[in-house]
Figure 1: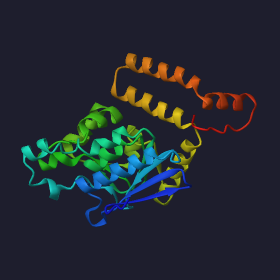
Figure 2: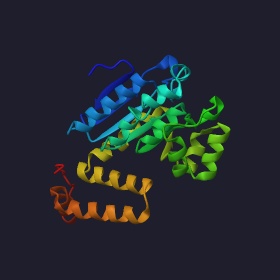
Figure 3: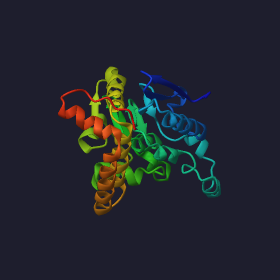
Figure 4: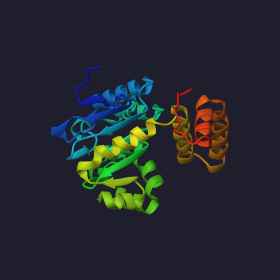
Length: 259
């Protein structure tokens, strides 16, 4: 595929990496970029050799927000009839394999929301997160008022959304928004190391784990427990379960075949 606003590559033949590439706009997210991102992730999801994907930006900005210049002239009819955001941003939710956000610099507004759509966030020590939409007379529209309180709690989410302030990587880690913080020059090494570790496991087990955790994040405890139990039971029908447990019993490294 030929892309204009993202760069796409694979690492070790197993990890798909998407780099947002609108440097002059600090990777502001417009329709074309989100269309390209969705297409790239879907291609990785369909490739049996790929076990995990990483989305990253530049040192200065993961994504500084949605493209305000493009949005400024929109009317209610434009965004409603055009299904703005839902039409292409939500494609990320359909990706079954893990997606890691490797964030450095600004992740604001839509950029913060994009990072939260990923399965977990590894942040460089220069990362800055925020939902400053209130300063524009609007509210977050790509899940910010929903995912942020689930990640950091009501009080912190209210603080960030109502004041529009930014929080640094250290605060984001303490609040639970990011899984780990590393030095800027180690960000991609850390993200790639995590992705390659995931790729070593059974793809079926990894996808089932992702699906089950998302069920917990989005639903009730009782429904989530039932869902988890059914997936847990189902994995006993796979060759990878037999291989994993036999390898453990016989003290050898498991070699999963994803079947």
